[in-house]
Length: 255
Image (tube, rainbow, N blue to C red):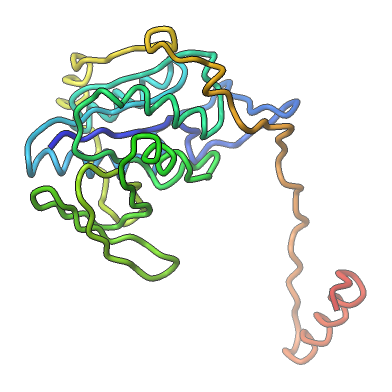
């Protein structure tokens, strides 16, 4: 069972985001594997433990993104692939097109990715990649069982679930609840340093940058406005209700 895992390095969820002149400031920021992608890595490792084969983790990003791949290797993945090229800063269209080029000649039974990234939250790369490779995809999965050449998948559908049977190869995107990602062990961290890491640029892959040119542009980025502290009403319940109605009418002007 050969699994490919698409992952992204993102801001640590505990970091305070700073924006200057419409751009995210990265100085002093801690970066991690996108949390949803951790579920994908864990599920791929579980498939390897059950069926054998190997797990390859793939990312597009700057040189620092190799740290995310090394973490996945320490968890139990077998090899990493990083496409480090400053000319590839693009949207989901660009990323999915480039990933398809990286993957098209690689053997695989299943591709796993996170349901979405916590920085952009679009959830588009996985479905776009599956379309580019001409394989089926199932998003937001919470359970995966494989028997022979078929996969039975349970996916989250807005508070309910749906069970789907699909033939391999398939691309799936992992939702919270699929598994509990393991922590890299010390031996795993040591072994990860010696595991193979392939590096590519657009020139290595003969990618025509004009053909994968981004379809969207970010005009501006800004933090939401600060909210004033809430007001706590006191006194008898009936008096609180009257005061609340007056505040909503006179100050908030919503009634």
